[in-house]
Image 1 (cartoon, one colour):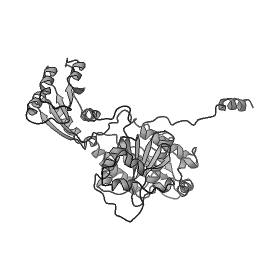
Image 2 (cartoon, helix red, strand yellow):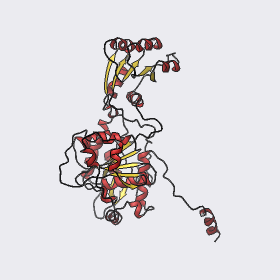
Image 3 (tube, one colour):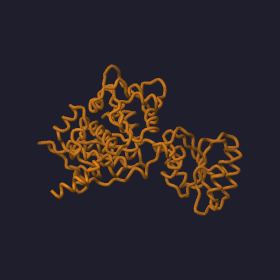
Length: 421
């Protein structure tokens, strides 16, 4: 049964992702020249945002005049952010800046309602974006990242990280069924990555035995490109590919914090949704993968240890991602016979937020799926647990409607004949 704040059968409506999604910026240099302390504070806060983790952002006071003076003697960066004074002649300042600005540098202007310069004239002088102040942190992040987002014709992949609050709570099962629902029911091209290299179960759950997978990518000597990663994938569905874990103990899987960055960046260029099955361990790279994800789903059982761990994870991730939507969580294996449980209402009260779903304990259904190498929907698409995964997929992708199955052209006629009978 799915529980919301009032324990009804409906999911809490989460904010859609389509309106607030900002693609991360690449490795670029950004220099901001501010006039006000408000803007300076917003720029400094933006520099700490995860989406600008690869960008090198510096800030100076002085606005347009300071920028012109600075670039008389030093090269210009990839991006210049300029805050203008009220009453300042923006166009004259931009003409002066052009005499010291390197070709290819992008300029973002933070202006005010009092500016009278036509937008067309700003564009003619090479301004890439114009933002009306006062600005907040997300305005700065969006302005910088927007300069490097892929064109509308190319999808920029979102990363959904799934992690268990405790070992054995079924986080991998949730991740795999969630990815299946995103691919099959929402028809979004997706990749699921099994990051538990030593003990991963994705290849078993999808009934695949790939010879290559995520280990080949992370241990590659060169930066992996799209063609290379494509060769490592196993096809699970028309819209779903798998980067499987070797699930072997012939080597030790110790990684640096940024070991998977290049793989994730490459996949973002070609795949709309990337689901990360993150193992229950705490290391530099697992923390980085969680903090860097666009959305995070924590899977927890309704007991005290899970409650404590989930609360710790939520607190840490909220603090590390102040400008993102907070992580969400679901309850797993709810209703196990003879086991004392914390109710969804009590769990939500302690966590200060409701679960997006409560997945019932159904050993027969999940056991059959695991032993057959199938998803729950493959065993029974109409089962209530299958519907839970579809609803979770809709919430996490911002897609309100799942695709409807195609019916026969004669279905309406048959229904009428049956009604008459």
